[in-house]
Image (cartoon, rainbow, N blue to C red; front, top):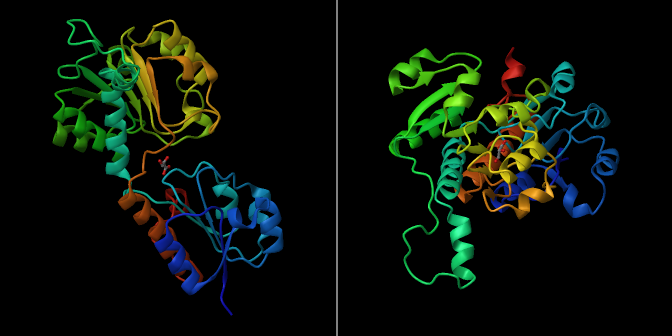
Length: 321
Ligand code: DGY
């Protein structure tokens, strides 16, 4: 008899095909039923593949008594009560590294879109307002020679630093643990958090979300930023107080912002949608076909390993502590 695997939503066909070859696959989205209801009907399921938008609580983890692995289809895993899973001996995996380039590219795309007012320009042209070259039309911010402050110098932070350097930007960074080797190798400068906030022309966050860093970017922090600075968040919405950001943008206390994540995702503060100085993306950091397929195959392989009694390849760091 095939072992049961629950996948919360549909993802890439190649991965689904592989799962179906090996397991009895239940896709919650296709049942039209509620997630918890499906778990209750399939208490013998041994693996759960979740999305970052699924809230995997202690209660839901406890429903499937034979659960061996929760494979999250994302690098972030703040949506899972992983401490509870680890306590129960359930493997928790994520998809690190593979999405670094795609996410850093999207970050750079947002920085460019905001600094050169690309979305606003596109709308201007489509509305028939372009009447010819003008000296002061859509003046933006020059990246060359400006300073980018990167919060978090993990894989994505570093990938962004290298891209920013190629655009002639000076890179400063803040991270909980200083990365001296990386600093030396790539000529990056470590600064204190407050210093970074005050000195940067572009501030971009690349840290995982946890309660400890909830609203790291609040009214006080936005107030400390330069009046013509750009704020970028492709990490997690909870890292910023979205209402305060919208207010700062409305009052032009910032040049602009580029967001791929939202505090109450998928809900977005209404005010943000009305502002011209913010570019809004629908959480597409890792959304290239190549990356999303590789991420999906990572979840499949880890499920195969766990259900054949082996240790999965991509256990979250906390599992190893
Ligand atoms: C992740 O994998 O955590 C990212 O947010 C995807 O864009």
